[in-house]
Image (tube, rainbow, N blue to C red; front, side, top):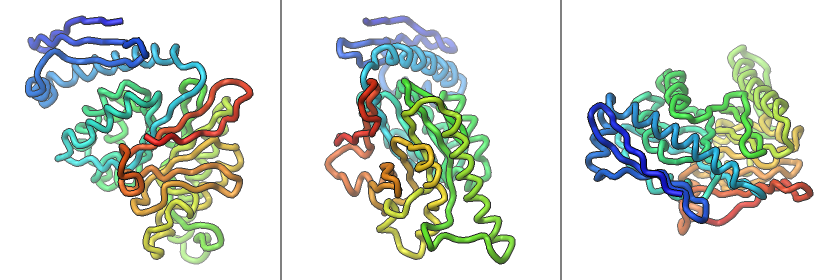
Length: 323
């Protein structure tokens, strides 16, 4: 199916095409050269109507994709994009590859570098052409400039679902997410004893764990995916300097994953960590920080692709695919 309507934005004629190929790949394109399209996106008066149009196109694409998915859901996961004011086009090719490969995109925190609205605007303009449901959690970098609420609003206005102790469902798969927090792992985890500041630190980790548990409990599907920024297990942060391991995650975040029999969990934050590990109960956990994927899998695009079966009677276990 090939639809070619036209769009008039503030006096600028911008024809575009929405196309569904025989193999069900949904794409759209604009019949203008890249320099003119860049000028439109750089002009706030012109960019906002175009982004609203792109959001509507993405919504229709998701409806069509939902009807096509029958036996499995393909989930692309990535973290630590660290977009800055100078990041125009840096990951555009990667986003295009993800759009062709997956049904849902997960971004596990540190979408931007300094937590600035300007950085976020650049990122959402590039993500606007990923015609997939996008689910994200914030990372510690989104809090750096104390403008995390502005960042969340820009992401939400662009159609990106930001989870914070909340959940959503796409194609029969439930997604629950929190930022998480630090505190250490196992017997070496920080305990709430002594000064009030130490107790408050631990309380923040416990609060994030309870938020994750609440989000998982709200879902009514048995296919559960957890998104975090901080790590829930030690195995995926190994390789970082030992002195900073307690600041990269907490085993308190692991407890809800085991209690609710989560299918798979993703996190970022540990740029020099390991790509995968398991909880005590065997739930697979993947560190999808961009730098980890670039270093560990240098011959593939730096994102992880997972398939979750939908047919009754099949194991719900997520299967990683090499891209």
